[in-house]
Length: 376
Ligand code: GLA
Image (cartoon, rainbow, N blue to C red):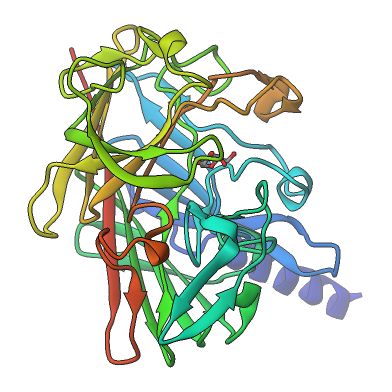
């Protein structure tokens, strides 16, 4: 009897330990907790990490696809709302979904016909989007299990995710070691840092694919979210969203977000909605402001800073009401927008675009920060 009792106590203690990876310090509001989110079809446990900061922001991330499942941000009155689309459980994430909240790679966005030539050799990638390659192929970085380690950092808490992509995976050359660090700082920044090294030259273009709505996820369309993008030009695409190579000025057309405009203001004039790569005005590759979204009702503001030369603004055009997300909310067309900091689509086939080939003696490094504040 006594042994059973002791055993029970040990079990409870270890369970509590597992749950509280880094419990919140007294009154600090900052911490990381871990719990079980679900199991994959081959019985692997997927964990969910809950990061919180002093400013009342909470972000939940799972080690399947590095998916941000929830991002709770206070409004001007201090009420928290979840501002990203997603699901309540693991199962729908394992099935087909439009890249909710995930890490995208090895090459985010499209590569024409899934083909590129490197050092005289032609490589053939998976063609999973109208004959083109999209977001890393049939099993991109959004569908793999990442090794996760929570850590405390100087300005907040972080989750370090690691994945080793094998030579030949989805058709890409070289073993690619990828590290993604998600940090929630006490300055209300959600920072994503990506690093990668390879043993053969390979294209690399990593990004993050959260669908935001600063009103709150599932609370309607994003038409009243007001957007500014610091870009004079965008990459013109054909009907399959493959760049033609032309960089066109946004001057005088509905693509112009150099001053803040409601997303819905001119969307009807853009065939299919926005799904375009903007050529950021930034110089060099230091972290610079790329976009700002403000939402008048809640007072929420989100600024996007990045080291990348481009940002894909996607207005959730393919959402069509067939997906039911968190809390039973149906996600209809334009219920979320993505701001995917990236190199330009199809760069491996456009020598005139900033290069995306990573060589064995180099380190890929990109940083993107989503910074939150409120307008009083
Ligand atoms: C990106 C693409 C879109 C679409 C979504 C996923 O944003 O640019 O065209 O493929 O991902 O549905």
